[in-house]
Image 1 (cartoon, rainbow, N blue to C red):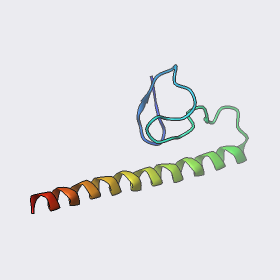
Image 2: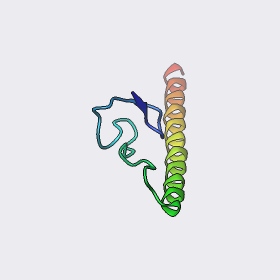
Image 3: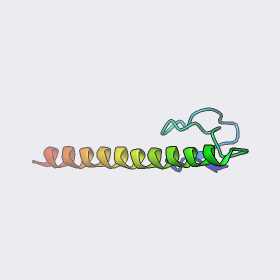
Length: 72
């Protein structure tokens, strides 16, 4: 069992295509890439990870605000 490199969701071997949690292309890995392709891949991965963290923190913040409003 592998993990998605962006959201760290566990992925079964039979899963193909996109991660069901964050949408990252699971099949897109650095196998047999040129140096330029590998650098581009790493840049895309870092951007996707940063965006995922922002999205998750935004959702958590929204839930916390909603909870505060519900308690008021």
